[in-house]
Length: 237
Image 1 (spheres, rainbow, N blue to C red):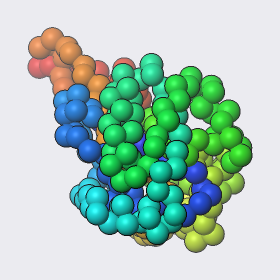
Image 2: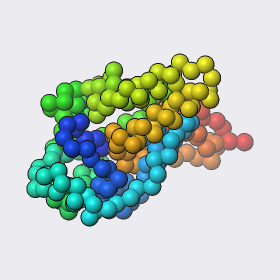
Image 3: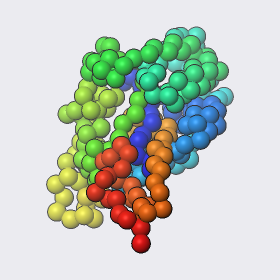
Image 4: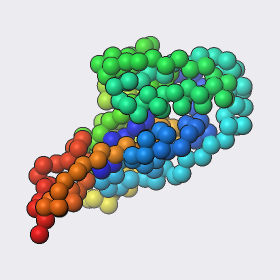
């Protein structure tokens, strides 16, 4: 049941990053411990109208060149992470090592979720990079995208302070569209713009393993639940 979104964000200040070239080193099993899958969209599975983010690519040579061009070689960046989330202990160490290989020093900073929320509420206190996870609060693309990328929610549910007038307009058009096809077109346009801007780098969709006996049918994915929706439980025939 791939409902959670593992991702990291960057501070809005400074030179533009190129996440496609700064992918984490290590295999997916090392990062997700064999559970879940590499993210292929900014929306989790179970939600329709997902724009394809493409397959991750890595170019360490180009990444090193970008660091040199920005004059950032040897500088220290902060990585906030929640040690209570087991996979973040692995991902934080791997990310630290990856950044070292392209010329950056990384300082891991353990935070609780309330501390993380407080830090991202102001641009002046945001960490350079943060490992965080979230799950869909709504079963549809529009409300989920609006929650995370509408500039009106910067500093709260818009963790990266992302602000783009075109995206705001698309989200408004999609959420008020008279037909499903017009809504899908607006939300797809918004997703493609967000992906092009590298506003948020979605790393993986960790999985939650649910065990049941043979008397219970397979439980369908519910994108609004952290584990499963009790109302979906059905007895097997």
